[in-house]
Length: 399
Image 1 (spheres, one colour):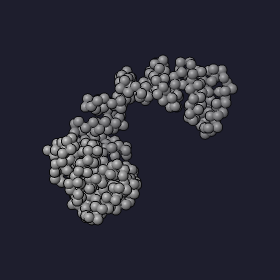
Image 2 (image 1 turned 135 degrees about the horizontal axis):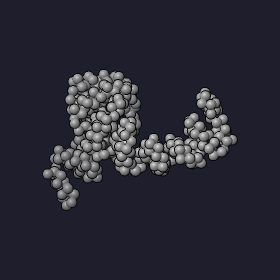
Image 3 (image 1 turned 30 degrees about the vertical axis):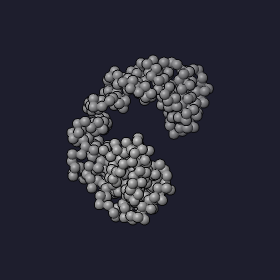
Image 4 (image 1 turned 135 degrees about the vertical axis):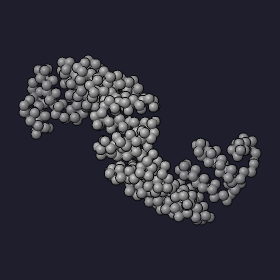
């Protein structure tokens, strides 16, 4: 074993001859396992035994770039290209170096040079795609990733990048056309069906989205992302029981997520089954006690069912996590109004205004609370301020 022999050399200071391929194997092993110090030692010893080995020098360049020794790496690349001007890996490393400097246009030129000398161009197209992404040139990025996918239909990283480019261009219809063409050629690709469903979902074409997600989970019955998106789509279609079934499948397939717990709870709320909703909201906050939205959903559920004391307890839990959320303060005020705690309600509405939330409902709620406290002049001042902020809303006049 070359690795065993090399590590024995390090321990005993003995010198054994290793051929070039063995050194490359050792160095790549250390690079893959993140042991860069040992990789450097292997390169040093390898170059002592094989001083003209271009491949070892290119591995040295890779480490120099990783260590941010860019000028030293650039000098070494120049020497390599003087010796071997047609070496594609030298152009690739030069592009990586230029990219790290932020010189993406020059990096692209170097990668295009590399294309001349390689037979398998997919890796270069992928690197070109990334360089164009760095420049926010989504069209050219997409075109290069499409070449990757044409070369390898199972290059799902390229597929994701293509869809990302369409998303950034807001070209959802074009994405749908592309993905439909792709699944025509590769109909058993659950990733493509999932991405197609997401595009339909963005365009609110929920029936088409549902069909796509159905295909995704039929192809891979353990595809959690497919079930999640299918459940979200069923919610949009008002099919809450079916949505719950799909969320529950995700909980069976993997560790529970607060997202799934909350969505199940909200589906039960929409079905009018608040006791089951509360059960799932409690599971969500048990899973993540810092989930302010979970506490707020509990507060809202108890509020709707007129259990204001419990609602107050849970909204306080939400406010402890996010004290600058005006939606939480507004709910806190509404609960206190129901409990006839008018001073607390007043303070909460003032807090909303201090946080720059000038929604009409806040002014009206505040004026009501002040009236209950007998602060009629202050209530009038609040209404006049509301009128200045919302002149076009006649509700103020009737107040």
